Image (cartoon, rainbow, N blue to C red; front, side, top):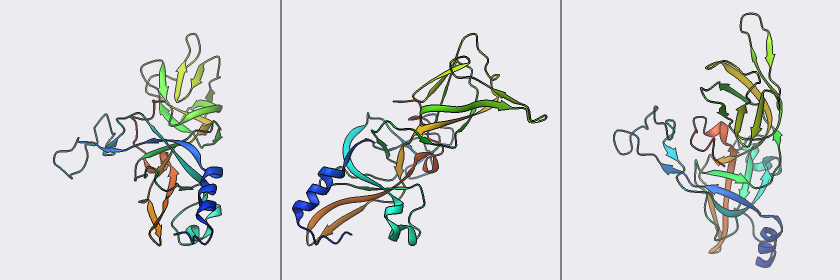
Length: 227
């Protein structure tokens, strides 16, 4: 909980100056299991066994996002790890819940370790995140170690979260794993319940720890090709 020794007007000014627009996908329980409260179906096409899906278009809200390096107390007690974000929301804003998806609206690529993808039967494959630029795409011969690299613009194109294999270019065979390294526009997910904060009966808004969604929601597939 913040120590609100500064005037309420300054508190409101902080959010006016620092909060930014984010998209918010609300997680809904997936009724794919055999009984209420039971485990989800690992073969569910909709949720991938995660037990949550995202049926509605994203809503819009505002939050002040900071790196955890600026929240040293949280890092010291093991609540956060390098790379996490802290989201502070103004009083009265929608409240984030675990397994929701938060998408900042800035268009900026950040380094991402990349995906391993099994080549599909169609001309397109899905990436985990929206790709801003591609550094490498290729396969490796597990016996010889030989690398086969594919070239953007000649063999494939990338738009958002979709890689399209071009007619006349080279492509991995169906079912073969290939690696793609790219700068990504990250999505985030609350991995701890948000802290709703009050002081002297005054709502100070919610504070939530956000983690890159591929670390929290490894099996998420329904959102992967949307947007």
